[in-house]
Image 1 (cartoon, rainbow, N blue to C red):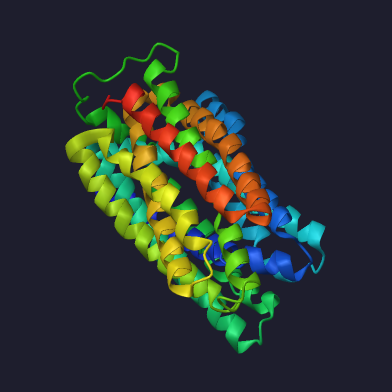
Image 2: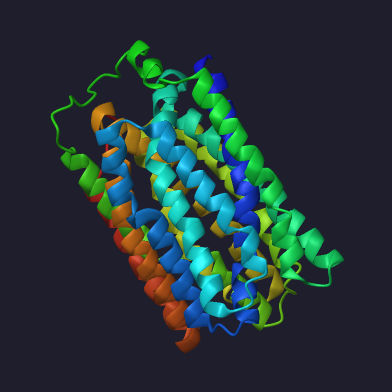
Length: 387
């Protein structure tokens, strides 16, 4: 299978998986609120979910490098995700719903370092920025269709979460079938990278993670610590009566469409100018609360779309940079440690925005702006270069 074809098929897997879990995430805030959750609980649970999705990669990343079982970990992680979502709409008690939200994110932690390493091998031949960007754009097709499907079923069922999330079992089963097929067709994706010429200045494998990787992780952690979760954004929209719960998935779908465009644009620029393109990320993150936590529908919607653009860069170009900074034998470990650092920042960001939202929105906006200014300084000081 040619490298681009492998990237596209792995993108189809991600598309269908995003159909499942982004469909669920689009209503996490209102669903938890319907079970009695406060803004702080929503912020902590969604932040903890992101922390689990990222922090547990400290284990799954080194495990993938040590065992080289990239396909097995990918399949196991996807299985946990697609099995956690359908019951979310019928459990009926807050603690169980919170556990399922976090379990879905744990599935992402299990699979992501291994899956990103598989993808990084193929993108060595296609161009890292473009390869990761195309994969992320395909992700967002699923992230667009999933929330729209949930919104449609919610509307038809009178707001019942059970049918809306139960329908997501179908694409989940297809995900698992495609993964087994891909593993049979491409058992050793690392062969793509072995055949590709090494870029000038590429790091040599010496058993350690490069210093540039750690400074880059510090920048990413800082900007993530000041980034609101969509759970808190959607909580604001529904609780302030700016939007009904059935319309929240539609807005989320629109944000995912913006995500795809931002990923493609930043990936294209990354292959031309390198990591300097990442300077736009703190600017977007600072704009999110200033727009989204207003009492004007148009501004709140604009803030949610800016949130989508920032997520597009986070999910594509940030990952591409890691692949260029770290050689193949330690890359899954690097993805794991990178995610672990950012996971702590995600938990802090979810709790921070949830707590400050309930206390003072102007203070929330000020604190986030200060964090993003610090992130810009770190990016300028550390200046991660192309490996």
